[in-house]
Structures are given as C-alpha cells and as structure tokens.
Length: 140
Image (cartoon, rainbow, N blue to C red; front, top):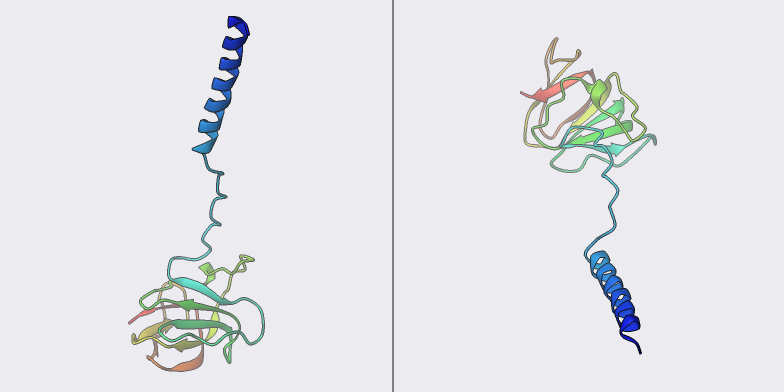
C-alpha cells in the first residue's frame, strides 16, 4: 500500500468517526408543546357530550348549561376567572356564560352576572352545587 493510499484511507476514516461522534451527541428535535388554551389551574373536564364526568373532589367545576351538562371546566382551588368568555376548549370555542357549578373545594367562591366581578354577588358555598347563570367568579 502506498503512503498516498494510507493517507487517503486515514482521512476517510477520520471523517466517518467525526460524523459518528457529531451525530451521537445530537437528539431529534421535539415538537413544541401545544399552546395553553386556558390560564394555569383551569382544565377542560368535558367538551361536548351531554353528560360528562362529575366534578372531582378538591376542585371547583363550572358547566355550560344547567343541570351540570355539556362543556365543563375544573379549576384548582383559588383560581379566579374575571371573564368566562376567555375559557376555551380544544376547538377554541368561547363561552358567554356558565349556568351551573359544583364547588368541591373548602373555599367559598362568589359568582357575578357580568364580567369583571360586577353585579350582585352570589355565594358558591363549599360542598354545594346549583344552577346559576354567571359570567365571572372568584374566591370571596
């Protein structure tokens, strides 16, 4: 084997090893997480079916229609919502009001007929559920 051929093979081997070590340290790019639809602490409980899951213990749940039906959201204790029209499901459907609630937290919430906590205040007592049309709510 000639010196020229040895240098050529050494160069090829060096290029292969460099490529192997370079690729070994890289990972495939992960897709970015989907945009968060709702503020932290607000989770979609049910999106469209008439009777979805019940409200889990320790959460405040709000329902699109009376009698705890159709779209609903579960909120961690202490989360306030100044305007329910900002809540979204996966289809980014806005809601202009909610008509029933279930408070499975130890906190007392207050609901209001208008956005921005405006209007007569209605108490959402701990451990209670009821039909009530409201457009904003917060911890009292």
